[in-house]
Image 1: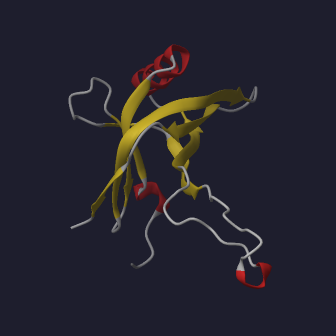
Image 2: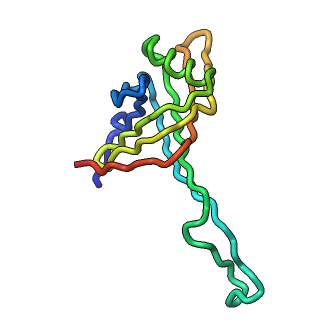
Length: 138
């Protein structure tokens, strides 16, 4: 994979559950993190007292975060409504030349900020709420 433009990393939402995704406008930074908890099964018989982990037993999750400026009322409304309703919606994160991560996420944080001489900015964080699918880029 060669270097890619950060602006091509897109966060998209399926607002109506119909499989039609809308890009969240105005995002300047985006981040995707995968995490997996471990299950420690170390015991008195562990070789050399080295930690042993149980394969395939931990809880997996994904976190998505982004920040930027609101470019349109529609993006603001989509995020705000989902946050205040505690809604779980289907989201996509399109990663150039890599693929698309798709699944259910809940907005866990939504922050607004602004200086008197600048634009209003926002930050949002999402946590996975189920199994995710990966589709490799063609």
